[in-house]
Length: 508
Ligand SMILES: [Zn+2]
Image 1 (tube, helix red, strand yellow):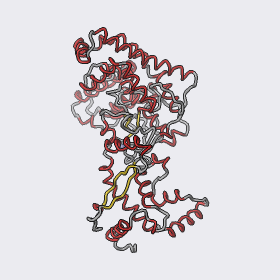
Image 2 (tube, protein in one colour):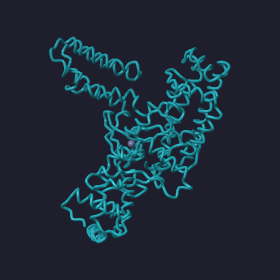
Image 3 (cartoon, rainbow, N blue to C red):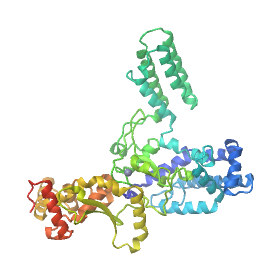
Image 4 (cartoon, protein in one colour):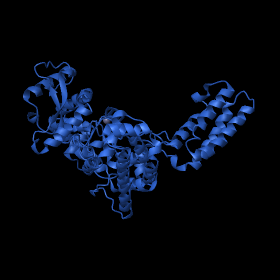
């Protein structure tokens, strides 16, 4: 688990807040939800809810829900004021749910759950029963996370379809019957008519053109269709300029393309995170593609959006992470009280990776004879709560069993520790300083030797950096061999192990 605190900037907070108040239309949608709620859920839903959460009448239930919606609208209004008055900063301790830092957001969740009992109980019931047309679902729709995440963006999907169709090798064209092919394509395109008025206009023209090809009675129609779609794609590019994202990487993005549209991609881009904060095993760097089929980190909702739909667009609730960790997390209950929040903490000193030979069984012939464990901090008293949280994170994300696969890396570090003794390190430092013309710190030299980051503040830049940092620390680089931080027995066992692995290296 890696700390992301230093990645949050005022600019990100401002952009997110501006998106919420100016673009997302959450306020408008919440107002609409208030007026249309009864027509959007069934009678049975309302009576089932009254019965199950113990509310006397339907009126009481609706009142409870509407008061909550009003509260959320107020939240947007107060954010609007903050945006207008330029009061946003990454170190401000605001408690607005959209931009509140983790500890403040936690206080707000408690306050909301205490004061809005009816809405909270309804949301909990919806979550447990996974009800489709429910209050939670409608609230989630109003907050518009799908649009923000671009996954539900119709224009992007439409562009993806055109991209597929404008290639003559596309699997679409594997149907040989001309009429079936034309129908199939037209049906695919027509699906987007229903979604948006803008697309309807573009589509009608496209469908008309394609149908003309059908009338031509030509045997080979694919090239004609591809040409029409290519034209439409170009036209689409002008119409939906915003949706066409340019190929981009962190460095290009940060060079000045800051006026691009705010969405999940631009959020991940702006943070500049490289490895998954939960596991630190996978790279999660994004790439933009013009066709809208770029790749980015998953955005995990620290508080799951199905259980806390009103936090689905809260900035500090959006954690870029890898697919593994996101799938482990799913919509399981997760909260600030029991787990570390990556915008506040990493494992840091609370938990450290340690290499542990399995004593007595140790024959030195296999790496199965040692294990990698996470040990909690020795001076735990004042940090007890954080250590407990760290252990919960470790268990939840299955860190120890997953790191079982990284013994090779630990073996390499041990080898390096044994080979790079004090004299060799001094020589290397001297050579590096001579080559670069700059003084090299001890930390930089170790990073050079182990090919990873061991700087506590930059662990998010590489994978396995926390493992490397802790094992390097355990092995005690730059110390005379006598100072080897393991017991003599372990040290001897290590050397034996290495000799067995590589008999050509004379270590003793
Ligand atoms: Zn991960």
